[in-house]
Image 1: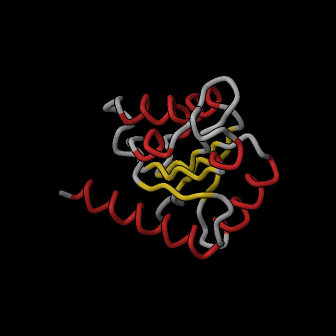
Image 2: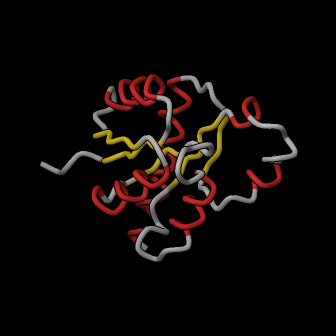
Length: 136
């Protein structure tokens, strides 16, 4: 039996993390979580996830810094990152402009809230693309 696909959710909102976990587990994904940027980096190293769902505004290390760090490291660069954030609602657009978000090396980007089926579709698409890349 093949091991479950592991997804790491990095977000400082425990209610959202729990909701995402419930949605993802309907498709038999194994979900692990972290609630700040530093813990997120530690979990990436410990858990070796197949995909990361990442918020941008995190305590201890912002998600944009973590995203760039992971994509710049050959050990983790192939892990797909789905940025899921409500940054436009939380921050003055001058502080975190849209062009800065779109310049992130993430594999996909979506605003909160996200519909459960949209989340699952995006996750499946990213995992399929990642698997294809690993088989080449």
